[in-house]
Image (cartoon, rainbow, N blue to C red; front, side):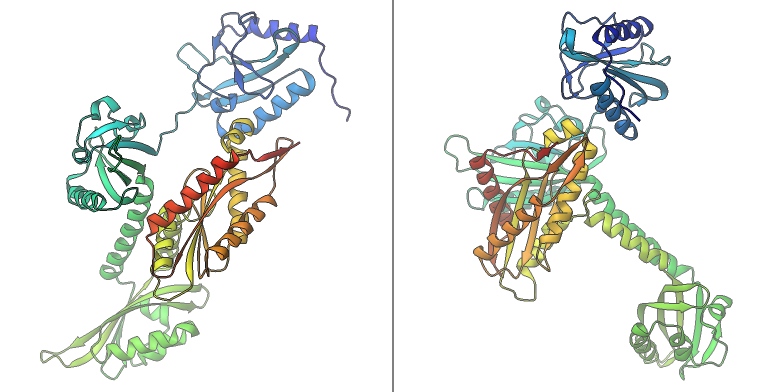
Length: 538
């Protein structure tokens, strides 16, 4: 099919005039050559339509599922001079709306975008979706009195910066965590200049609810000009909620299996079955007088038979135990069974037999694994999250299995924000996912890749022989990035990053300090090179 021709300038003027005439309650914005919202030229006709303010792009106003449609409409406008599409607005997704784009660069130097719809009454305001911040920086005196705090504190804790100036930060901490906050503060005061200490504390929001923060206090108290402590407060409420969900789910399932037996068998001191309920009879195909050990092992996965056999033998000597094993049930596939084995004794303490409670915990295991992944891995990239990365680093530094040393490679994507601005967050997310895949493919065996910020990644590698070896790993990671490609909106994005390397021999080094050294090395490289954008190859 032949491409449609560009609409003539006079005809585009007529299209604009018609749109202005029939959309008296609509919205209007001027778009630059790259599709981003720009200032409305004073000579451009607006016909009293409401201006769109506070948004960098029309995509900021549209539900995510409609982003591709808007991008296609913009492309069509570039090719043909005018186009439109139906959209759902974040401000009123249930109200029908339509977006019209007209190329009037010949007359006003911009494209005009008009949003119309019968449901766009005066009570609708088009503003970009507000994203709640997660990080705030606070400056404190040696006695932990606030002297400066970022504006992010308001949406995070409900207090304005002015209200907190002059206040002690301990007053914001949950009462149950105040002693831990004091201990961490005192520990930080005794560290060398430039050092930092990290602690996880519950804070109390102005409205009374609890907010978890990971607080990193940086010691600058020896600064002769401005002695201070600079605190970075990262909201980790979602992460802590996921961990609490894991704990609660495990406790719930444990209590259920203790109080609601699904299958019960009783055996005498000789190991012969003396009682079993209906569920047990169906699950293990056993009968009164049968051998308890044989009945259970017959359907136990071969790899778990030694574990189950040992537990059964020990419970008949008086040792209570719990085991989890694989169970092959005909017609039901492989299941995971938790067996609670308890010895039965007479008044003198002599073992008279045992009782075994079997619970199908297949769903619990799957839930536990799923929640563990949620609490450990970043949902977008599949990398370790910040907490899991720091845990892996601490394990590498203090592992019981000696190795050569630990390397931390800190990578920060150069000028990532313009990618989101120009191509949309979906393209940015694809780029981050590709970066993660490339880094994981290049990290040595036994190493992990973590995403600790929006566009910041960290590789933690153990058994690294020295700084030169660590530098080679860093070079391999950059090489892997250079081979990555993400195709979007007619362009190919090639990620570039600034990289910092830190190394510590086995048994030495502090996780926070090693991470800080790698971070500082990365920023030194970024400052030296000036940063460069991920390349867009059209």
